[in-house]
Length: 149
Image (cartoon, rainbow, N blue to C red; front, side, top):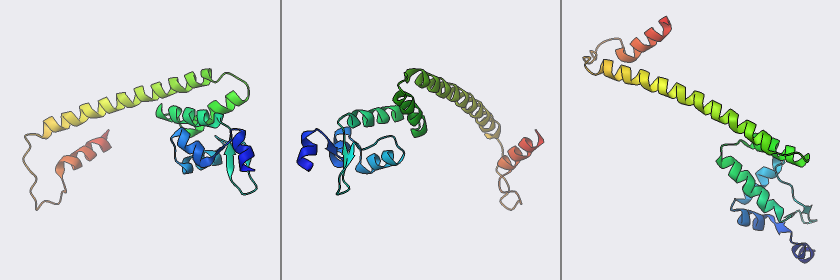
């Protein structure tokens, strides 16, 4: 049976994983998420995949390298399987990612400026009395200031 499958160009899971440069466990995981399906499952339980599964796995890995989640990749593949162009949804997801990153960058810059201001303000402050009830007046001062706003 295997020789017939092999002659048809089907790949066993280990061969697929090797050609796509992923772990066998990754192939199985993607299968549970329905990102990938074997073309055939033998009576022995072995999975056999069509040669285009290599291309699909490589696509998934490239999409992940662009920070697309597996859920987003499922959406893209689902659109494609419906016979529709996937690029519009990819562009939409990409725009969402860029917008999210811009917001994160703004928050990080704001936090950095705040921390730099504290560093400057605290640079010349005397150390706390180690016998004081306060753990660290610097942080406690910040917490009090944040509670007041």
